[in-house]
Image (tube, rainbow, N blue to C red; front, side, top):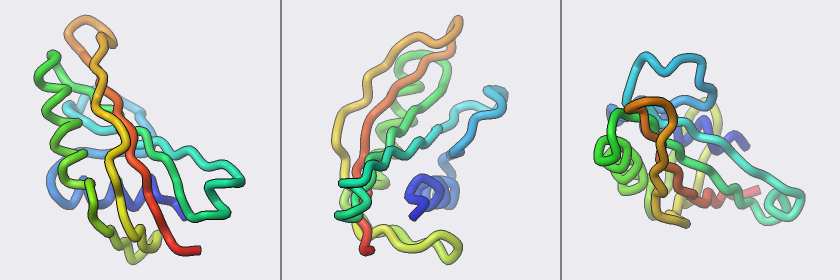
Length: 116
């Protein structure tokens, strides 16, 4: 299951610019979603997603990641193209750091549970 793309669709439908592949930092702020899966995770239907925000300034990047986390936390998400996530759940708080010049990043983790 492509839980990263399902989550990106959720964010984009609500006005949060989200991608699963970053090809440009020109359209900020943005959320980049990466998905981690192991054999054990696939056995239980559980993925860990890393939500990384890119924005100008510390407060800007924290705002974009916190908005995405608030939207995702505790809810099911359906995508006609990619399937159903039964529950997204916040796993960690965003940690900000400098990327380049005034561009900051902040990352947090979310778990995505789904039925096999």
